[in-house]
Amino acid sequence: MLPILTIWHRSLCAVTGAIAGGFAGMLFGFAQLQQPALTPTDAVKVGILLGLVAWVFILMVEALWLHYGAAVVWPSLVTSLLSAILTVVVANAVAVPVLSVWIGLLFGTLVGALLCRLCGERVDPRGVRT
Image 1 (spheres, one colour):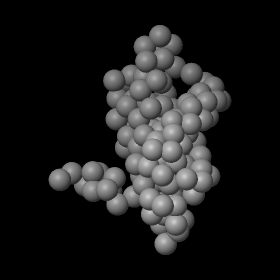
Image 2 (image 1 turned 60 degrees about the horizontal axis):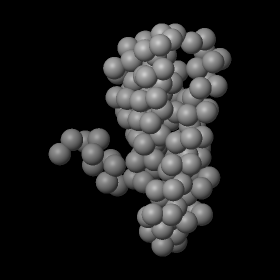
Image 3 (image 1 turned 90 degrees about the vertical axis):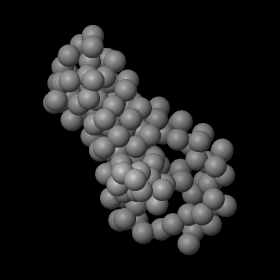
Image 4 (image 1 turned 135 degrees about the vertical axis):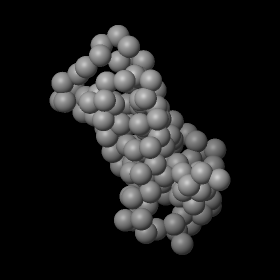
């Protein structure tokens, strides 16, 4: 099995980052087809916007459907914002719209795994910290 898939099995934060990064990369890749390059300030603003939209989706999936509850609200916000901002900034620098989703998946997974390791807390599906 690919190493990146084993990270997704062990870390909910890595999955959160991958979802946010992939989402931001996909939408930013579509936007790059129309307007190839943004200023760095505009790229950060777009990353924040896409990160917040991805966070709402992640809350729906993790907090409601997977029953993690309020335990994932703030960690998923930080992971979503950092993943989306990093994805948009890097994809803007690379300027190849086709690669934006892959950039998002890669950087989102790395950001999520790093933040999970820094946090050190584990949350089971009932919302209990272990």
